Length: 266
Image (cartoon, rainbow, N blue to C red):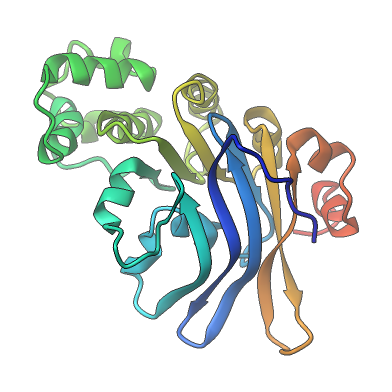
């Protein structure tokens, strides 16, 4: 398994991370350094653990019964799984955008304002709503209907609203779990263009089944695979290779990576 070299510009570090559901190991021995203000993509076949690892980056797995993590996830110099760390604060600083758009049953304006308000934001709310919608490339399409329900938007607009909602609480990292899988090609392109802009202000980690999307949007790519380890017959997810995206897709070190990106399996 190849690992990335240590870097002082890393935002998140995974040190020998293994994640289990009850007694079943889902992913094992992940070492990775995720660089700050870049886009990192996780690719790999179904069941390889890429979404499980993504959710571990803001402790969303804590909410799943029987899920446990061994190893360390370092964020801002601290082990985020330390008992002294508040997982709610972790999730404020590391936001999540899910596979299917899930706007609140509120107005477009309140979708943005609600999270900021409960997190104690005391500034100009109108300005925050506009700034968040602009960053999500949605302001021009919604500025005249902020009082309308978020459900009145198209699927692609709803996903950008969810991204704007995440931005509004001013996180440092944005996690995206297949954010375009339910969207049409035009909506997907808008999300990808927005990701390029957002990385100037945020660190972004994205899980995608679309390898062309990984090539288009990411700076670094982690290829996850399913392997059988010597001490068990069970198939377990692992990080096969992690490198800059150009290397992963054009000159990978591992044969399994080459087979996957060339479409021989997956």
